[in-house]
Figure 1: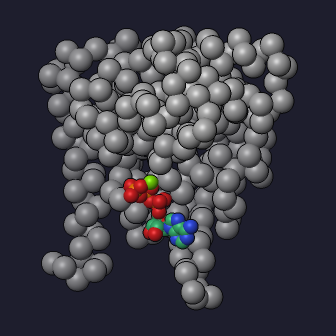
Figure 2: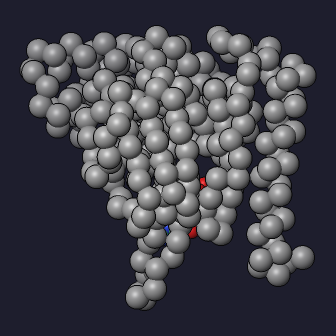
Length: 264
Ligand SMILES: Nc1ncnc2c1ncn2[C@@H]1O[C@H](COP(=O)(O)OP(=O)(O)OP(=O)(O)O)[C@@H](O)[C@H]1O
Ligand SMILES: [Mg+2]
């Protein structure tokens, strides 16, 4: 199902207007348990989106392997759904119509499409806004539609690239709580990219720290906080210790980078 095995994965891009290639991700190996919630942090440009796009099967990889549920990834598949870093709703469709869209692409039965779209619109708290168009929604509401669209197709793996990036801190906390409730019920394997360390700890069973030049995995930190997670945990000793540890990993990466670039 949603077990993910990544071995020695390297991803290259062609440099614009040149024959040279750029190594965006180098020799990444990760093993993600079926049903676990894994968060990824790391400075801008370290290859987080690239890694997610590769797992989604939307970009090719130069070497190594990705397996989801024991099957090699060689393109997009029904069992994986992605919420993109930039919100990607169809402006001419309503909230309900946008959630329908993913189901239509996958050719679900007509009756199922309507029923599931309505259910997931309600699940993300937008039942009263089903007939609104994207421009009539706030940024947070639009992101909920994106999440509903990904969940509605019932994937084994949910790939989320900074889905709360554009939201204020309070809305983020509420949305994070909602996402955890849905995940705890459905038990999908979730990979969630964020810049916010606290969010990474609060949501994750494991936090993957990536570093740059080229993009690689610096550390994988297991988060042994009980579930359900609560806002009170933010002040616990254990939480603060995780935060310190993760900050150190990220800071070490920035120092290493400055040395390469000759800044220090
Ligand atoms: N289509 C592309 N063609 C060439 N280079 C690319 C392409 N997409 C990304 N890159 C390069 O790959 C590197 C990693 O990019 P990526 O978007 O994966 O980083 P990220 O960790 O998601 O960053 P951010 O936190 O800013 O979203 C960057 O140096 C970027 O310039
Ligand atoms: Mg990114």
